[in-house]
Amino acid sequence: MTLAPIILFVYNRPEHTRRTVAALQKNQLAEASDLIIYADAAKNEAAQAGVNEVRAYLRTIAGFKSVKIVERRENFGLAKSIISGVTETVNRCGQAIVLEDDLETSPYFLSYMNEALDFYRDQPRVVSVHGYVYPVKEPLPETFFLRGADCWGWATWKRGWDIFEPDGRKLLQELRAKKLTRKFDLDGAYPYTQLLASQIWGLNDSWAVRWYTAAFLADKLTLYPGRSLVNNIGFDKSGTHTGTTNVFAGALSQKRIIIQSILLAEDDSARRAIKHFFHRPLLRLLTAFMRWKFFLARIRRL
Picture (cartoon, rainbow, N blue to C red):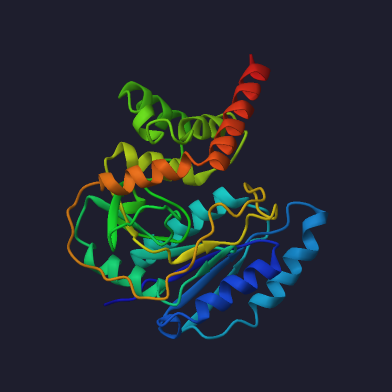
């Protein structure tokens, strides 16, 4: 099994970056893995001190087969940084594991990612592997598939990333033409269509919703673990698109995820469990707020 390089995207959050790297160093395959770090440049003077501290810390990182640091000379922003960094890496290496600076991982994260990449390498319908799963109440299988792609600790091959479409307008037009917006929105449980429209209008710069949409339209599948191997620690107002909440937090799996042959189809029970998760009162308030912001922004543009 050829281990995939790990790409880590960082900016100006030194404490988050330290926690992310410390957890990754505890992974079983860390010492045999190449780590590529893309460090974005400061957007403004207020961000410069954090950027400098992060970059100083990056030069101390050890515990991997190799560490390569790419320091951007200009501010790319999260979307451009990820799109360009993933594209560069998969074009060179054929595959990649992708993390941002606010994702703590289980010690079994790299094992799961590499084993799944190897297992599904030649299965064209599987577009990616994901390490996070929502803390749903219902039991989940050891692994399962959902249609589309995801963004909190993930991996893909060049053949998978090749379907990424940066043009949000084109994606939205196709969704509407095929009458897929309700299914795309988890039958109304989460406003992904509005998130995509907001990206088109410049209200957000989400690369992730375009990745999800491109994979969804192509009827591709992403593999998920039944127990989460990733915890997002960025919901403290420190991130580009995050507020303050712990509703997405769950216990990291302290057991290995077993990769084995399963039906190559979206798991209906897992989809229902995630829909139920988004129907929780706090999340219903969150999605209602998102819809209201979208409505106000639309009115302002008329």
